[in-house]
Structures are given as C-alpha cells and as structure tokens.
Image 1 (cartoon, helix red, strand yellow):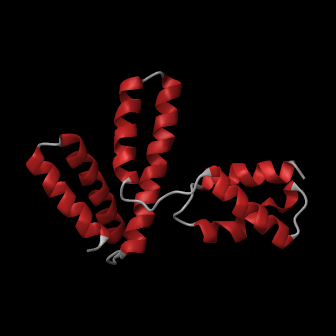
Image 2 (spheres, rainbow, N blue to C red):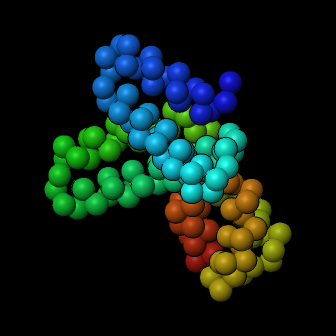
Length: 149
C-alpha cells in the first residue's frame, strides 16, 4: 500500500473514531499532496509524497519556533500535535551522533579543512541523508565539525 493510500485510509479511520485533530492533520497533508500533483500535473509516487511530508514537517517546525517567539503556547501545542502525526509517516530520522559520524567521514573524504568548503561538504552529504535527517541539523553538525578543525 502506498503512503498516499495509507494517509487516506488513516483519515477515514480517524473520522470513524471521532479523532478530529488527526482527521484535520491528515486532511491538510492530503491537500498538500493533491496540490503538488495538480501543480506538476503528475501523480506522486511514494518518494514524491515523502518529499511533500518532509516539506510539511519543516513548515510545522518553523511555525513552532515562530509561535514560541510570539508567546502563543496554544498554537505551539497545535503545531506540535500536527508535527507528531506527520513524523509518524516519515522514515526514522537520524540523530545528531549518526549525522556527525557520516559528516566526519565525508569531510575526511573530501579533504576539507575549513568553513570555506562547507558548500562542497553539504552538496555531497545531503543526497546521502535525504529523507533521513533534517537539513538544518545537518548544517549545524557540519559547521560545528569544520570550526573544530
């Protein structure tokens, strides 16, 4: 069963169970997938749907940060709940230590010794970690490793 079908099936189940938060979150995800399909005039495969889910998760994280700065705890809680639902459909994310190991190996492989080579490292590293790690976290780890050299 594709991810899109799973989202649809889970939305129907949430409707039956009366779980309005999950129903609404899944509805927003399905709408984002549909919008992407309409914009590109294609049917998304699992990889395309995962890309949309990653984008939605990133938006939620940014919204959480904005709402925290604005002092809106009720909105933060709402966005965190949606983010938890989105993350349940994403592959397991790598933690900081796993990223650090892969980043250190990539830095050594490229022979980069300072922050000037950060773009080169990120260009090589991100395709390896696509869908498995947040880009912002990867950027932080690489910057930290290069500053310590």
